[in-house]
Length: 118
Length: 143
Image 1: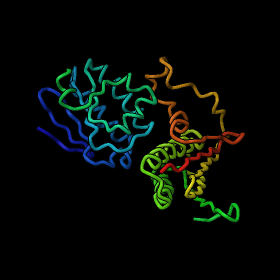
Image 2: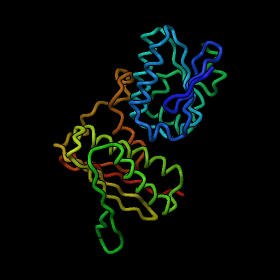
Image 3: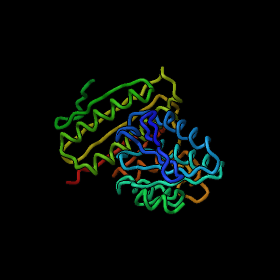
Image 4: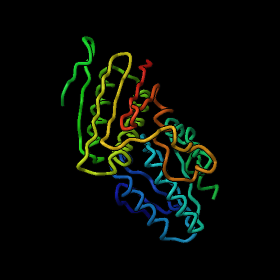
């Protein structure tokens, strides 16, 4: 079952809410606040949510996106849920490493391994 | 768009925009187009795009406090060897040395404060004017 809104593809896969950024320019051109609001609302819609962000189409990152992810992580935590990230390209992962946010977020190479780890 | 001759061998392009993020995207595209024209590799263009976005965001949010009546001035000069970019706002400035280190354990979970750190990580040189309302970024071309 999947839905598409605001350039995000949301699907339920084995009890995990998987969010894919549908357009490779989404984090570049769509206001981050708009995406953050959508994801935060999604996080608040289900207690103990298992949320997985698929970064396959993400080719750009900024501190604004990192800020959005940190706030999302907190919101998921408030719901006693778990947020995981997967499919991050090496150049994008480097941004997480430089900021040490690879230690804050639960990051997996693939969505398959992320789903298994819940 | 005005071209300002800096010296006989190079010219800088100057662009002025209101403090609005959509307008900032035009600035980024202008700079990146020049980098591509001078055959900067993708890794350099990625780094410059990231750092430039941080500089512009800081100028809009912190320098100009999101006041759409204030402006951002971007100047850039791209040669085959390097890209030199200045981003100025109309704010009172700040001391960049007093910004907390976002990589410290106690700051990891804070949503803000990573812009300057990312600029320094991805550009070869980052410097502020004395007031702190203009930042100069330099990226060397590495083919």
